[in-house]
Amino acid sequence: MTETERTNLQSSQSPARDVVIIGSGPAAWTAAVYAARANLKPLVYEGEPVGTEIPGGQLMLTTDIENFPGFPEGVTGPELMERMRTQALRYETEVRSELVTSVDLSKYPYVVASSYSEPVVALTVIVATGAKAKWIGLPNEMRLAQHGGGVSACAVCDGALMFYRNKVLAVVGGGDTAMEEALYLTKYASEVVIVHRRDTFRASKVMADRVLSHEKVRVIWNTRVVDVNGADEITSIELEDTETGARSSLEVGGLFIAIGHEPNTKFLNGQLDLTAHGYIKVDPWRTSTSVGGVFAAGDVIDDYYRQAITSSGTGCMAALEAERWLAHHAGIGESPILETAEGPVPASPEQVEEPPADRRSIPRSRRESGAPR
Image (tube, rainbow, N blue to C red):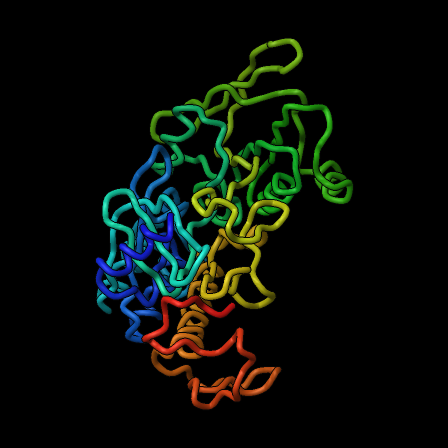
């Protein structure tokens, strides 16, 4: 975006939005609830369906959730997402069913561009776009995954469900994630079969040894899954030997795809620091990113837990951090005093000792001059 375009945008549009949230999973909706209750009137870009990706994230492919607090009888993934969305709307969150195509973080305030609407100016941005599971890409694989038919990309999320218990379960993959998924499933399955396209695992030796020595696990080497059978639920998988091309069939009661995740960060165009695996890098026990006023939450920062409840927790953190950032740097609202390991956080800019010139608060009349980092 050129300087002229940015100037025209800021002069022609309505006042800058205090908080813009990108995403529609647990992290995004939790952040929206907290930001809205702080009178920051958040704008949420929830996205739109593109292939297998739909608003609501990976939970939209989860039929039963039994480990989210507050639902003793369990809840479906789509129902949980709808309830979170409804709660955010109750507090006057604005939602746009569009994809964010780009974010300009080169100068403050920031500019967020989307599929259909005019770009908006944002004083803070919360990125909660998640990470999409990598699938094999077979038609029946995706159909059964979307309809609770015994195909999943998360053993911790789904493996304990009664549907999978005491059955032969297949795991596709050869890295540490696949090893962890297989070991977790041994608690519930009668047998776990790992299908791997090579003759050795890519996983660490420690993890591979644990799997190979487990009495409930066996491995089918040099093999890939070429089809998934079953109408309402999975019945078997079709296998192909990667060396000879020979075909065979394996009866299973569940299939877990463990070939990795891809964080949804391409639209950022490299403007935020990422980890070696492509996740947004944040400060320890915080959600602040390498750019001041930009925060990240949920699976887009998390390659370890990847749970709905942890995503919600970081969504809460991001909203609170955005609220405090606005109070300290943009003169909007007040930030509550919190006792921390580093001492109390001031409640408002007036309580802050005069900071260095490059970190002084920005009065409302000077927002366009550039944000402190």
